[in-house]
Image 1 (cartoon, helix red, strand yellow):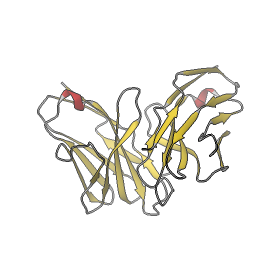
Image 2 (image 1 turned 30 degrees about the vertical axis):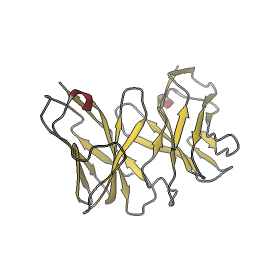
Image 3 (image 1 turned 90 degrees about the horizontal axis):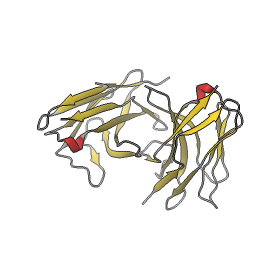
Amino acid sequence: GNSVTQMEGPVTLSEEAFLTINCTYTATGYPSLFWYVQYPGEGLQLLLKATKADDKGSNKGFEATYRKETTSFHLEKGSVQVSDSAVYFCALDYSKSGGGADGLTFGKGTHLIIQP
Amino acid sequence: GAVVSQHPSWVICKSGTSVKIECRSLDFQATTMFWYRQFPKQSLMLMATSNEGSKATYEQGVEKDKFLINHASLTLSTLTVTSAHPEDSSFYICSARDTTGYEQYFGPGTRLTVT
């Protein structure tokens, strides 16, 4: 079956540091890949997505590239801010629509803490 | 933006009782809603998919008689945990897909504790 593995947290960084959160997946075929972010007390929000190999999703300074050869979708940001502190979930959608419109398979989540 | 609410945000109930959790799309119509369950430090696990006006589709291993889902309108889905037991204690999250069918929006979750 489909699965998503992401690095365990918490990840603690200083403000303006470079961020990488690793995500790898197992799936048959070619799923769509997503990063969701959950701020304290709020629901999950879509951060970025990629629907096919070599696509790069980007939003709010975050980016991730769909790497089919390594089955990875690592999240990166060049300079993090305190406001980026949240839990980040990597997820995949293996549906014919491919648009995140079916039930998703999630990783366990990575708690990111940014210190001033 | 699209907002999904859940009520209650947390609930404590006694073993053997039933508890209902509501999921509402506040500013859009949702033909499909999803229910997930999350254990501490674990992934969100899809429990079921509910479509307005029809029966829910449950994932393998989820007891449909225990987790009753009703999606009676385009803005409301409910999850009822029947005859709750301590092992049902968990964080339940819903999401709603808008009528364009392209993206789903998540509620803030409901913490259920069964004593």
